[in-house]
Length: 332
Ligand SMILES: *Cc1c(COP(=O)(O)O)cnc(C)c1O
Image (cartoon, rainbow, N blue to C red; front, top):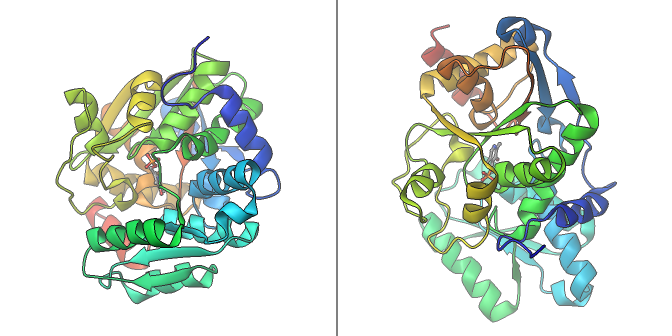
């Protein structure tokens, strides 16, 4: 069989699994009694919130850095790795690089709040403050790659990143061999695409369901248009699902198009209600992006009766302020 153009094969995901062994958490899959009763189904929660950085992005970043060391030797990474991200990806790169003994630089605009920058620095990365916009931070990343020979670790659009996230799919099937459906947040597509690639290879009858924000969902708009599109960003409780997919997307657009069976969009009110539900009934604090699976079940009445369903609790980066906004929106 020929290699798919996106490069995210089962073999690539299995190789990622070996590289991640001992480097990232093999996270638990727990049954939610309350949600299983509510939806008359077996609702399982994949707790990526248990990763040391609080989100699954550690899988992709660790896989990419470890694979580059494996292929080209440590010397090739002597100048270090670099990225521009305030969120879960920036923390993931900082943590992964520190663990693997590689220097890391995270470029952030001067507008990024100090506490977010400090969180990245505390994980061992050098934080470089540049300009007044995300674009300025990206320009600095490009300069460091060009002039210093640093290696860019992108947040989603690389086969090594998506294969790293795909290790979640392998773990899901080990813990729930009779899985019928998985729901995960969809932004750049590394998470859903990686999981989908693993599931389609090993258990193609699983329904792979992506969930995006109702507004500013670049992947959803791009899939509808048939090519990558830029969309205007909006603030959302699910801020980790914001951002574009890159007009020159070379991996995840094709990957998501191939492996995703269904796609839903969820309102801010539904995300808010789901965040509150997780805290109140499950005693789990999750960020908006991690609550979209439950939001989709509730808002769209997806037919899951009698099914074994996994919800990917992708991260827990939520401030008290944001949680308060969710509470207010959920009316409690
Ligand atoms: C990045 C992220 C997502 C979306 O992942 P993509 O690979 O960009 O689709 C979902 N949830 C959380 C918590 C994230 O940090």
